[in-house]
Image 1 (cartoon, rainbow, N blue to C red):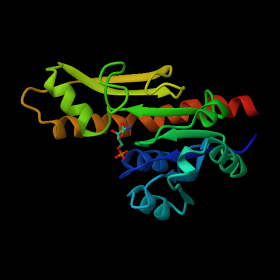
Image 2 (tube, rainbow, N blue to C red; image 1 turned 180 degrees about the vertical axis):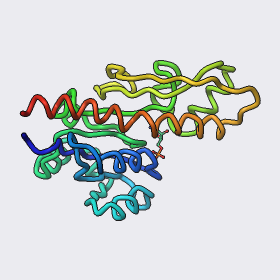
Image 3 (cartoon, protein in one colour; image 1 turned 60 degrees about the vertical axis):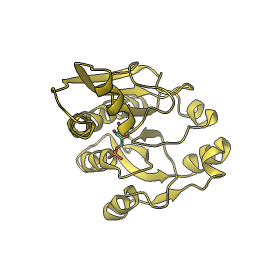
Image 4 (cartoon, rainbow, N blue to C red; image 1 turned 30 degrees about the vertical axis):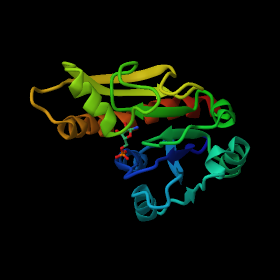
Length: 197
Ligand code: GRF
């Protein structure tokens, strides 16, 4: 049996999804989190990495744009799969290609609705409420070269309650994210792990 798949999590903010994946990894035989990558030296996710004893890589302005640099560093660290969890920078195309079929992202709406450039964080939930959508939810997808347009792996929806403020919708969607993202990461990792054995 090969060792579990080595996962890197990319996050720019608080990292509650990163935390859910880190927790799940403690009982997974298919993947372990080997690296946290961020473009933000103040990101809350760095504290989480420290708490779990996982190394972190803080990318500066030049580094996060440099595909060759990222591919080399991730390969040197033995990374086999990437989960984006609230990572706000565009992934350079070299990295997307190097991890084709092995990079996943989570988006807090039912793609293709409310996705694309500029649609992140609270902006997504504000737009959903403004549009009067009856349902919203989360989408987990593979990452390709266009923002939020990779193959959809899983979508789960919820009813948008009348009078909900964007922050309430965000909390409800986040609960879905924390429940389903680790499971989907596990599923992709399991497939990769089975292939390496
Ligand atoms: C989540 O809503 C996720 O869907 C989106 O960014 C947010 C990250 O939240 N991509 P957190 O940092 O995991 O709390």
